[in-house]
Structure formats: structure tokens, C-alpha cells
Amino acid sequence: MSCIKHALALVFAVLVTTAVVVSADTPAKGRLPTGWKALGLTDQQKEQVYDIQGRYAAQTGDLQRQGKQLRQKEKADLEAVLTLSQKARLRDIALEGAPREEAPNK
Image 1 (tube, rainbow, N blue to C red):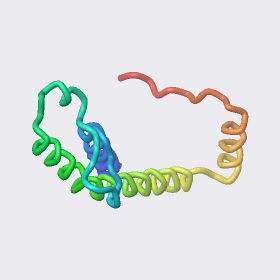
Image 2: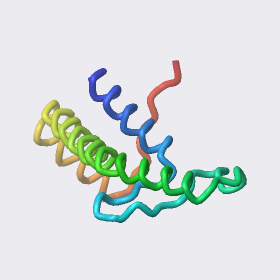
Image 3: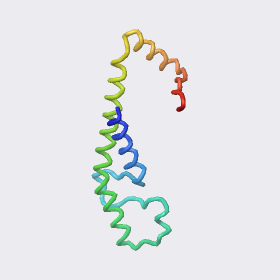
Image 4: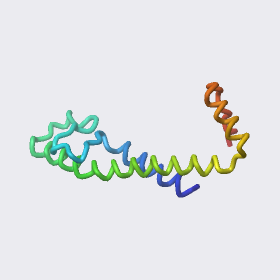
């Protein structure tokens, strides 16, 4: 479980530090990270930023897919703990839109 948390934290960190996720098919054109417009970057610096964003886009996309797969596997593993009647009740609760019980604060 700790491994999943670390992987998800990595995915989150990559997404937070990347202002824009540019698809791998997009040419080297993006948006500047928040606040960078005010720095007075040259056209060459802007192109370098866009190139860097493009290089990382495929990696962040891969990490997003891995994070999604990890969340799906975690959900399946969690549900494997439940009995058939508990799974049915969980589906009913989800359909009813019942509020979830919050974990106690430590």
C-alpha cells in the first residue's frame, strides 16, 4: 500500500509542477508556467520552455496512465476483501449517494 501512495504522490508532484500537459503529438508550443509571462523571457527562452514541456509531456502522460492503473488495481484489491453481500451493499450505497464515513483524524 505504501508503494501505491508513493507512486501516486510522484504522479501528483509531476502534475503539479507541470503547468501544462502538452500531448506528445503537439509541436513545441505550449503555455508558460504561471507567473513566467511577467519575467520578460526572450522568444528563444520561450521556445526552450515549450521544448522542455514537449519532452516531458509523454512521460507525464505515462505517469498519469500508471496512476490510473494503480488506482484501479487498488480498488480491485480492496473490493476483494469484501464478501458478496458487502459488495452488493457498497454498490447500493454508491447508488444512493450516501455520504462516506470519514476516517478519524489522528
